[in-house]
Image (tube, protein in one colour):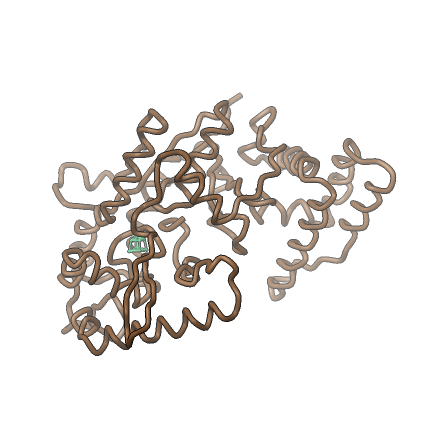
Length: 379
Ligand code: SF4
């Protein structure tokens, strides 16, 4: 029987790097394949991180590249930028992700049964990239619930209730099994017009069964996956079924530091001063240095901390055609002293408001923006 491949994409961000280290150290019996989709426009720190990880694993991280780029001396981004005749990518026209990340990824997977590991943390409330291809299954090891929502939709579908109960009856009896029956019997809707409600109920049911026992839930889902032909079903057993770890942001930094791989320097906050007040800025994500998902304060950071790269980013703009990285504003306009001042003042105001609101860690005042954008590029 063919076993599935276990693959892990290194985006250059802290979460995927920490996930790779965590899995490599904790599950040496799984043969992980690491890959990286290079756009040719990453920050130096990203390339350094890739090098450090390769040394740590003692094996290469495969760089994925499309066929049409072979033999050209251009970076992937420049190659496609030209073919789009200078039309910049944007959140509405994400040709960059489609061509430089998803296309080589699909070729790499090549239709084979594949388990793909995603570094969404336990302190994040979002669903990761789930492939529409049935040969690719996503697993989220940092979360209490390691399974993707597509499999849970099936698991909690009332049509499968007796099968799920049968699976659970190998682990639970008496009152515990009664609780499972209660949870599975809670009404659920799969009406397409009520997706939010469906998600809420699935989440509630998932948390309720997890409260009763994480390994038991994992084993029930694993056995269930064998009835519907998911890639993991090809494994006889799966070591992550017993994993009860939940890793949050601080754990990620600890893994990177303790391993010696290190935290990419662009996450380190740098102080700025405006109107006699001190603020802090940094970059909140990996990916291309000119990524259109970045916040205005991150553009200012790029200008002040990596002026050469900022100037490179400026060269891609064509203001006559309104091709700018930031909507309705060119980078030339963004770096006018009055505009920089305004951006910093707004950022400081927002940061102070967030601080007053809550975060015990001062956590992600900047990185509140972390959730925006693209899991393929930034995790
Ligand atoms: S990092 Fe941004 S610009 Fe680069 S490929 Fe991803 S979405 Fe596109």
